[in-house]
Image 1: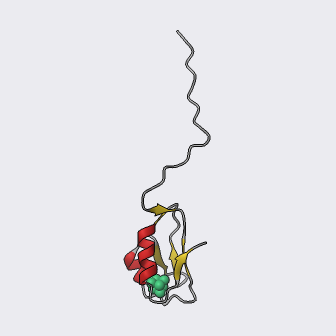
Image 2: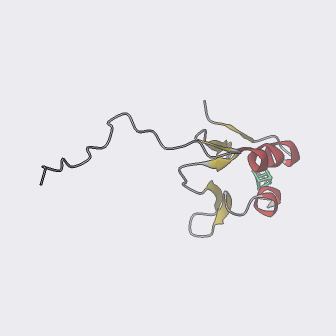
Image 3: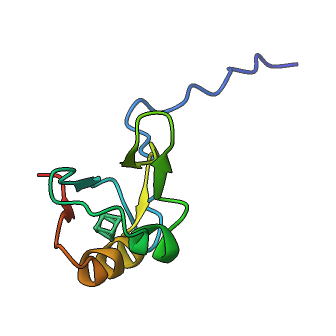
Length: 85
Ligand code: SF4
């Protein structure tokens, strides 16, 4: 009977890219936000209203749906959503 070596995982293993998702993070200029709720209608999994502090916030996530964020950016009446650089 031979010796079986354990498999050692490769150190350069990267998570597979998720189609349509990005690690870029959307951001909101709170000074310009009118709290109209449009972005929450478009992407409730990305934007929410924080009742405790009274302003809109981006929900923490590892990946964001690029198409939904772009749609929220296009639809925002005060153009206060952008991609964080
Ligand atoms: S759509 Fe724009 S103005 Fe309206 S709540 Fe969202 S960020 Fe604020």
